[in-house]
Image 1 (cartoon, rainbow, N blue to C red):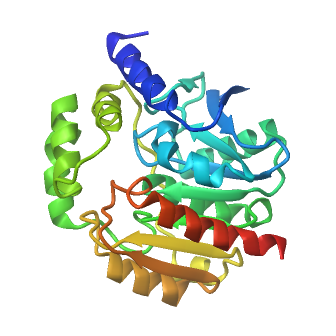
Image 2: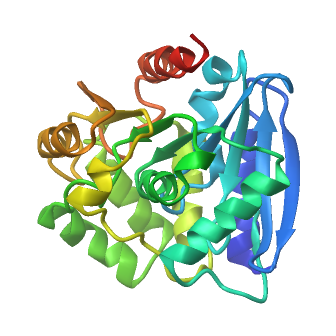
Image 3: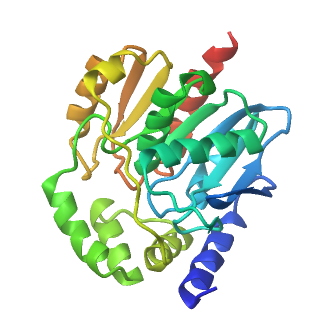
Length: 284
């Protein structure tokens, strides 16, 4: 393990130690590598699989675990090839189809037939892609400020991210995080992890293709889309309008005072409540 990996995983452990529920670490082997899943909540609770944003690790759900894990069994996944505990194997994740196959294996390894699926940012793009490709394997879908699904990035966001992408360091990542979250006070342990995750040796991000209007029109999965009104990643109102027009079974809400990288932990009580209310309808 490199020094960068060790520092990142130590920072992730520090955040996970503060989760309000006892956690179990599950390791799932495949030809893509070893996927590590952090599980919590009642074992007989309805399953909810969590897909984090890019390089944020499964620990990003620290503010949501208590609320969502009261009645649900949560499975927070560290993606292979990114910061976190998962370890790459002989077959790299290279294409969007590989991501779908990898997630098939995760669901199979956890003995899940059609769980609900929650994704933030890049994790939202992966979650939507999976629901479109495997509609029979997803119960309900929740997307938190998903990127590259209904609209592109703002040019200013990409320009601010460029130094971090070209030469990633903890300091650059943390400055970028402070800019996008508009200088709001953030959890120090989380800020430390975000910086260390930027330095974690990783492979190339595999970005799902943006769905076409016909693909979205054919989606039958009930979907909740929660958008950050102060997101600097994209124009959230444009995303909301496009999602409502293109996705037939979508509900959308614009959350005031919340930024893209601040989801899901900014305003966690409201976020959790909206998610719980939406998912509860599956049981009615």
